[in-house]
Length: 363
Ligand SMILES: Nc1ncnc2c1ncn2[C@@H]1O[C@H](COP(=O)(O)OP(=O)(O)O)[C@@H](O)[C@H]1O
Ligand SMILES: [Mg+2]
Image 1: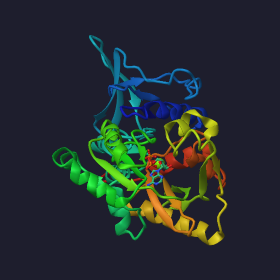
Image 2: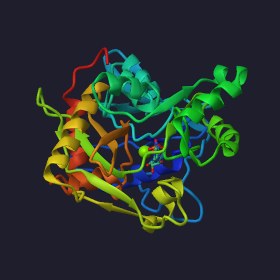
Image 3: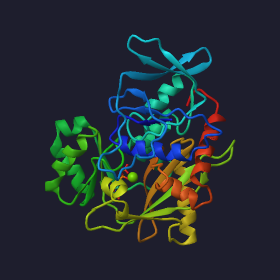
Image 4: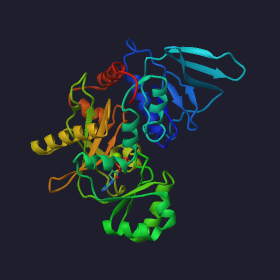
């Protein structure tokens, strides 16, 4: 189990790891929890993470130490090795499958997946390309549009475009009308995202988003309900399985202009999650169909959560796909499966089995 990581979603990933460790069948799986510190170092983590929570005063964090863990290849085996200065390396044993419980860049974006590919190590979830597409809010839209899904109006802004001609960028954004949502192209958990109501707030929002990624996506604000769907790869050559759709509603709209980081993780009562969402049957069927289409469009494997805006007129606008969605026991993805008849321990087992049954190579 890999968790923590270099992204700003480090703490969220730690809480996910605690949830998975508490629910995984220890009789069936021999679990080695490996934390990735914020500097990228891999360390052996304790086996009981149950005290970790986002509601404590200090957020959970993997701290780098004197020992480091690496995954190396000995012949056909993938071995975990612990190294420490001036000590003989200690071989922990071989690895059958890796569960990367990582969110955001250097974890959910294809980089860790690429590392695992290099040693033919099996892992849960999407491969290199699907992970990278799911991370990039610009390229995922390009792929969704090509697959016939509806994406909202947006402009992508590269570092060069903003640096060379900011006035031109402002003009392109004005065409979208206000409000707009300014986002780092590759981040997550609402980090660096702002809702901008007028042109005079735009530059500050851009500066903030650029703290997370120099490439940006700026989107027209969409008025609609936030509807999500959980997708799970089918067994063998079966089609992807799709949960009942869920809805996220801001209860405390006064303090949160949108579904921001605080609302997502810190202030548990700021949002309500309901599943199945209260929608007409036909629209539920459309959401589920489009969620499966989005999963296949990026070539996802294992799991993904697909998020839509559902407008008053009944239109479904796809917002994003998350190839490693929030996965604590109370997160939307496991909750939607629980409401669709698959509980958290079963879901974990299913994901591991899908990964163990996969061929290695060229993902
Ligand atoms: N174009 C938009 N129109 C309206 N609300 C938006 C738009 N884009 C994002 N939001 C709001 O911001 C939240 C976070 O944006 P999202 O793109 O999902 O980022 P993240 O990948 O960090 O979850 C959404 O859940 C929604 O509440
Ligand atoms: Mg989102």
